[in-house]
Image (cartoon, rainbow, N blue to C red; front, side, top):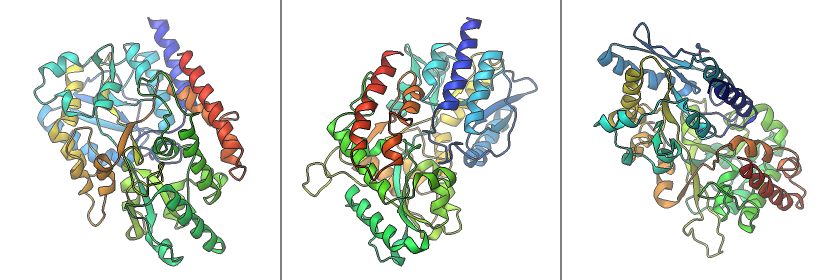
Length: 451
């Protein structure tokens, strides 16, 4: 078993470093959050009355630490929350799996949860949950609950969930006399508005749209589903990314790239930075990033709109399945070898209880993994309408972020030569995208077959 865990840890480090950012809690620069304090890697022990917690998003630190401090007042156990950058987070965690020193409590993610669960690296929470009157798994989003189960055992409790919305700069639209987004906008409307802004703003270096193709979660995944395709089928055993529906969605992605910021500039600066520099009219972004824009210099100009839809049947209205948003959720997990499992679970329970989840939303940390308290988050930022993030749950279709056992294997391959790299780098060539979708179909099928 020790050798098996050693190989697993090394494999996880390689996979997670090579993989792309596709998670709530992250920025668009691949770091999944600001580095904040580097912290240490934590330890498997709770000696000295302390619990070590690792996260990767500095934006969430203050709120989570406040909640943890409230737990500390009750438990008498201090909580040290260490913020680690995305790549370093997984490297340190896998190193901990190899060497036996993992943080007591940490975030788990869909990219790698299965591998950690299957190799008994996470604390089995079943008995704790059964005895805990504050935790009922039926109260959480089903997709996130299922994600953190293996062979019927629960290894993490949902921390949050997220949705995607369209963010636009009112000042840019006004400057170039372009109508602003409404609930009736289709992706064609987004394209036409982006084209107008790009053409009118050429002398100013302003573009109508920015899309970071490395960010599938808040970007192109959504369009594939809008147009009727599936990156991964619901049973996690197949894909329809080569279907006509998926091709139509990726064709719209190609069109948006022709009127958007060149990928070379996006790779250098990131869409968020370009947007807050007043160089971009529109981007799509996740609910976990709200605070970044809320605290920006020109925040008063920024507005959130409902995700556009794909008018697939051409009837001029949004029908079921034509307006989609990916959703994902992190899980609070504990190391299987923590020397203080009772305290580790108690902290997780505090974070994930209805009270803790409401507090998380009230503090603007992120939307809850607990059903029915999303409006608390939407109302937590004064003077800004965040209802597009919650309305999508009633007025659109949520699909859980596509994953398989080894998600990053095919995710990474899709971004390379032979995948979508060519049409992304050469969006003016209309012949490339359809072929790339066919290639993607085989890439994913082959990866699943080898899992």
